[in-house]
Amino acid sequence: MTQTPYSRFMLLPRIRQSSVAGRPPRARLRAAAVAASAAVLVLGPLAAVSSADPAPAPGPNLPVALAAAVQRDLKISPQEYLQRADIAQRLGGFASTAQSKFPQTFAGAWMDDAGRPTVALAPGQGHDEAGKSAQAAGYTVKNVAKTQSALRDEKSAFQQWLSGQPAAVAQAVRGVIVDQVNNTIAVQVQKPGLPMPGFVDPAHVIVMPAAPAGPPQSDPKVQPVAGATSNSPRAGGDSYASVAGKTQLVCSSGFNGTDRAGNVVNITAGHCDPNIPAAGSPNSPGMFELLPGSHVGAQLGTFQKSILGAQDYSIVKIAPAAKDRFANNLVRVPGNAPVAVNGVANPVVGAPVCKSGSRTGFSCGVVNAVDETVQVGDRNMTQSFSANICALPGDSGGTIVTGTQALGISSASSVADFPICEIPNLIGALTGDAPQLFAQPLNKVLADNPGLRVRTN
Image 1 (cartoon, rainbow, N blue to C red):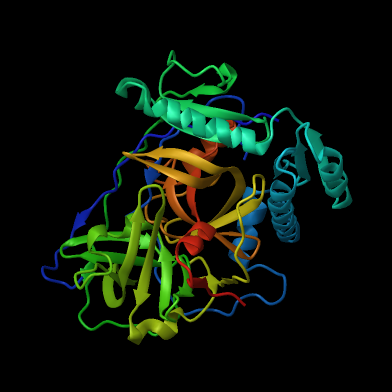
Image 2 (cartoon, helix red, strand yellow; image 1 turned 90 degrees about the horizontal axis):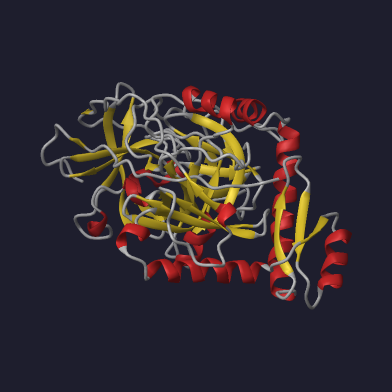
């Protein structure tokens, strides 16, 4: 199986000026190179709004909308989805232990296209012991040339080499990943003929043409409703408006949680904050509810911390009047039954994942790359992961789960210029050029913010 990465070109988010003055604030990656553009997903038409919560489906069953997305996108049963997600997390735990215990032989781990867990080992101290441990756990062992540590060193060496190159070269490189499946690093470039260091395999320097662009979309006109309020629960995937003065952005709620002080929070995307420098100050932008008819309702909270650069996340402190509405562990398509989050997971290549966003609802795919560096506009996201899932503007900040565990926050898309997902999905089915969703790993957010917790069962 061969994996190749996608090139990305930035599409700036559309920013709408409010009419309210003074309002407070995979196919797995294929051998054939394909075109894609990375665009932050902020501000899309309001396909749905918050509504009262139906009860989550009982037992191991998934809510109907999520089960339908699993069967449609992954072509497996909901039970197989849950089983593969569980195996992937156990594989990820094994990989973490193996990397620590057998650093001179461990070379990566992934789920193959059939959902079989695979562990790669290079020649070195501990090879036989590591192989026996992997086989005892039920994993297939693949012998390769380079350890995971060596591949990471090559990725770092490439980034160091790139930092010393002329601007014309540096700006034409779109990203670099550790390709565990092919036991190499893969470099994404905008044009052919670029110089490369000798340790980069030319077969894994991927040149992409410009991506097709869909017709432009008009932004919704959001009008305020004085005193409008709601008492319904707020779940991951529900839409909201972020407001800073006259500037408004439309995004999707992320995972509900609490911070180290016990404050109720929501974890969403950093680029959904319309005034990042003001986060946590008295002038912090606000998160507002979106009501039927595209009206801005009550303020739900304020952006307390927003990061946009190597990572992309915001922590929104929920207002006292709304905190009970966020006291749940639910993820949903607005207006449909939710799934209850029961833990936090780590991204594993090949693991099945599903995203929820207020624009496009539930859609599913598999993780293509982890520990990925990708250029988005004038910044590089590092330690991100990607999955072959379509997402559109308005899905930003929404939740990504694997099985019923929280995994990540939707950040950027390769197909954000398209008006509907059916178009890039059809192109992907015909060509193998699947849409790509780039995500902020939730475990990195939690690690950066001691005491921050996601609500679980």
